[in-house]
Image (tube, rainbow, N blue to C red; front, side, top):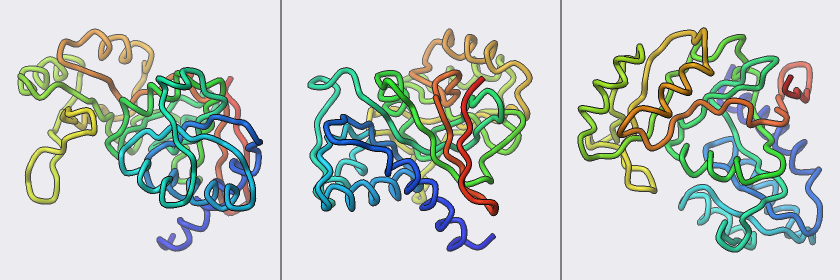
Length: 231
């Protein structure tokens, strides 16, 4: 599938989700390429008169939203959101368990998702999997201090961790000032158990397993847009 074809599918999913937004909503704005397409669609609706407030999950997203005229706020002012719209790296069919964090904003994305009455995922059909970890590593956001020791503890969970680097070879630093260790597990047989182990690992600030958080996934594919709901 060509990049332009993939982008077209992402836009179909984004358009389907954004058209359901209503006046007065406070909306979590996800990060990543698919979410940015959704933000573009939200900007179009704002120009047409839609009155909403957005809560961004990254500095980049905040800048994009401002340029599109989308009013912004924070969780301090709006601790409970009506809906959050975001992308995902993998979406497990049936459960709607997710792997997120490929874009490097997983901590803020999880906070916003947990603060939302509804969490809607938009993606193209390539992101659907029968088991998490089939194609994607699990991003783990860690404290820079002693990250090597944290990596060793992650190996004890069965991971092969690798420090995420920028193009210049320096460590990738999140908006929160943390590093990311991309952890290869392969297909994950027990995502609930792994989540518990990661949650209990010293040095881990957050991880990219989003279990039981998504209410629905709007997936665009060759047969059109389908909406999946969690079991």
